[in-house]
Length: 207
Image 1: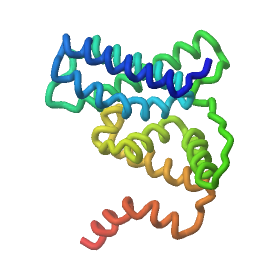
Image 2 (image 1 turned 60 degrees about the vertical axis):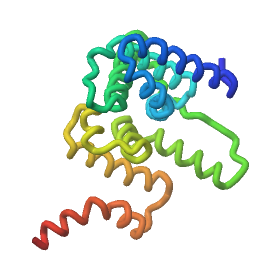
Image 3 (image 1 turned 180 degrees about the vertical axis):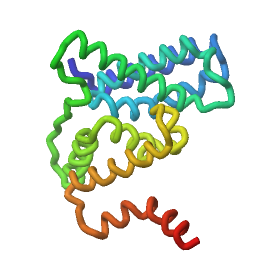
């Protein structure tokens, strides 16, 4: 069953109310921050689940796990990174269970949303969304973390449980693949895409 805008608004209000009530009783200072992070959690959830209803389920499970384990959170560290890590682990745990329970079943990541495009910018937006969803999962999540949500390399490395160099490599490959999928293959585009990675090498060579 699909959800309309009213349903999603009801879910969001319910999530906000539940988070405020439960988190306040466990760690009051985390309550407001958890509520403020719900939009970012939804954006990251769409990295794994293009279907809004699946993404909402993932956000809800992440929040419930976060609240249940809130006393394990270390004050002074980033609550956003902590919740993103919980979400990522939750999704991959779900995926492993589904794979064992239903061999050959398609994960929600593979389901691409379809929409009728009536304007040029809508068409381009849909093309970008489809291209992002076509990226390998590890490249897609790094692209969303850094390029969309503004998470630093260091935090992204902690969330994805890998080295910073691996994060940079995945982001570089994700950008390159995305440009190819979108038909942006001109030399100028390639140079602009790689400029941030090339300059430090040039500077060190000159030194």
